[in-house]
Image 1 (tube, helix red, strand yellow):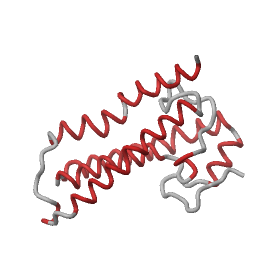
Image 2 (cartoon, rainbow, N blue to C red):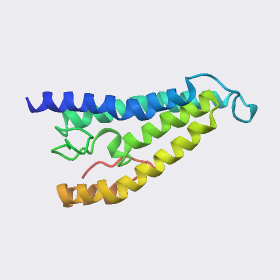
Image 3 (tube, one colour):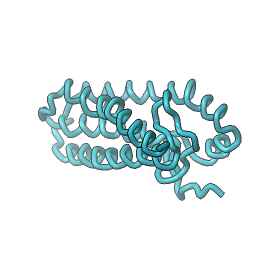
Image 4 (spheres, rainbow, N blue to C red):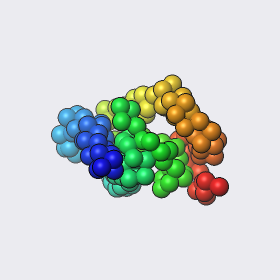
Length: 167
């Protein structure tokens, strides 16, 4: 029953957060209409598509891990009961935020819209402040030395290679 609640909660939060931040808001700004390519270079659009294609599975995978492994959601009101340190979390501590911003930047490049670049930059800044001021202190308080070990082994924003093996 707990796992079912976590899956349903994660699915609901997925619709509320990433779908709004990386879907509805960019759509409302661009109506997903193509403008001129940035700097007149059409291949930049392929970089945008690549960011979108890379970002969406990252978001889906992370949400699934929160529900199935963490037995909770990424939402602060229904946090996981277990620290999630598998999958993309072996490379970087914040794959959902990175993936959401990648999808936004991808749309900016695909549609040639400067407003989405600014929106993506402001969104990343908000995520950074949230992580540093709210999320990390809460995780330290909740998971203690388990989180501190994770925090010292896995970078916040720039993925590590090779992946952390949690040994």
